[in-house]
Image (cartoon, rainbow over all chains, first blue to last red):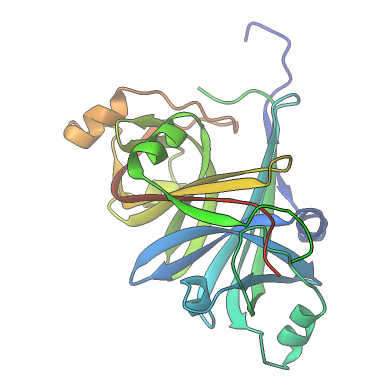
Length: 142
Length: 142
C-alpha cells in the first residue's frame, strides 16, 4: 500500500518451458514412498526427451523405486531479483538398466553423472505422467 | 588411478549438526503423499527446536498434509570444493494454526517468511520422527 514495489506475481510454467528448465539443470530431488513414509533424496539427473534419468546403487532405497509412483523436483531462487521457480515431474520409475523398451532406450541415450561417490550401476528412468512448474516474483507475503 | 585427487568420501551427519544446518537455511522441500502419488513442494521454513515450521494457504495440497507422514529436505552443493550435503527430516505434519499443544507452541515461537506471494495464514509444524544427513566430498563416481 505504501510503496511502488511491483505486485507479487505467481505464474504457471508450461510444459515446454519446464522441459527447457529441466534440460538446463542437473541436480534435483526424487520423492519415493516406503511403507507409507515419503522420503526425499537429491540426485544428479539427465533429461532424455521427457524422461528423467538418474543412477543409483544396488540395495539403495532408490533402487527399490522402480514401477512405483515418484515425484521429481527442481527449484531455484535468485536473491537479487526475488524470482523463484520450481518444476515438478510426477511419474512412474522404471529400472532401465538392462531393459530395452522405449523408456529404457530413451534412458540409455544419456549419461547422468552422479556427484556423490560410490558405484551406481543401475539406471532409473522416470516416465512422466505430469510436468508442471510455477514461477513467482516480487516480495513475499505476510 | 592416474592422479592425486583425494578419495571420494561419504559421511553421515549426526542429528545435532543436522539441526545446525537446518537452523542456518530457510528454503527446503516437503514431500507429501496424495492418493498414493508423492508430491514435492518448495517451502520457506523456520526451525523451532527440532520442529520444522512453514506457512501455507487454505485449500492448498500442503494444507491437507496435517496428521500425515511427510518428509522435509534441504541440500547444497559447492561447485568449487565439490562438497555436497543433504539433510532429511521424516515426521508427522500438524496444523499448528490454532492449536496449543507442545508442538504448536513451539511452532508459534517462530515466524517463517514465505517468499512466494499470496496469503498463507495456516501454520504447519513437522514433528520429526527421524533427522538424518549425509555429506560427500571428492569426485563423483562413474
